[in-house]
Length: 81
Image (cartoon, rainbow, N blue to C red):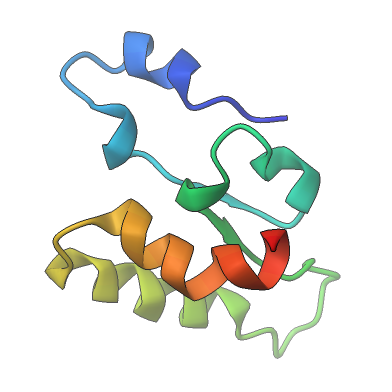
């Protein structure tokens, strides 16, 4: 389990809503499911494109007013409802 609250204290000036988790294990999302981006397992494929897709998605987050709301809209319902 990953808990973003641990980072808030360690990263002075950061707010919880400014942090996200990218992980291949959904069980790590339990504490902050609306701030987590699922990613496929990397198994050594030379043609793996997952990080490129993730980069495009992360760049798209720059223009949203609430990153947690956007992540929740894109992933939360699919994995947690």
